[in-house]
Image (cartoon, rainbow, N blue to C red; front, side):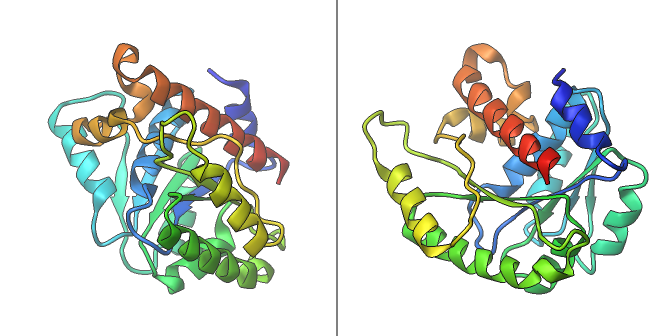
Length: 236
C-alpha cells in the first residue's frame, strides 16, 4: 500500500472526487478511470466509478468483471443526466469517487469542474487530440472561479505514447501544449501503447490487477502516473 494514497484520501476531509475527462472521445479516459478506482481499492480504501458517458464503457467493463466474479468488487454507477448531486452524495459514502465524463458535454464538464478534487485529462499525441486538449484547457480556465478552492486541480497525462525508443512525439506534443496553454500541468509520467491495456478492458480488470508477467511495463507506467497524480492532488 502507498502512504500517499491515504494522505490524498484523508486530506482535509473524507471527500475526494477524481474526474477523468476530455472533450474528445477515444483518449482513454474510461480505462484510466476504472484502473484508478481498482487501484484505490487495492490500497485498502473504498472507491466507486460514476459513468456519465452514453457509450457506457466503464459500465460495460463492470459487467464483464461481475460476470467473471472478480474480486474485489469495483462498483460502477451510471448517471447520464445531472450527475453532480449523485456524485456529492456518493462522496459521503466512499473514500474516492472516480468520474468518467462523456465527450463534449460542456454542461457536465462545468458542473464537475466545480466539485472535483482532481481532474485528469488523458490525451494522445495526435494533433486532433492535442487541439481538443487546448480547447478543454481553455474551457476549464473559464470555470476556475466556480471551483470551491478558486482553481480546478487540472492535469494532463499523455496516453498511448509510442513505445519506440527514439520517438520524439511526446516531447513535441508536450512543447505544443506548453506553448498553447500557459500554466498547464502535464504529468512527467506517461502511459505507452501496450496490449495489456486492451486486455485489461477485455477482462474487466484494472491494469494493476493484470498478471505481472504479462503487463509488467504497463503496471510500472501506470503506478508512476497514479503516484504523480495523487501527489499533485495532495498539494492542491
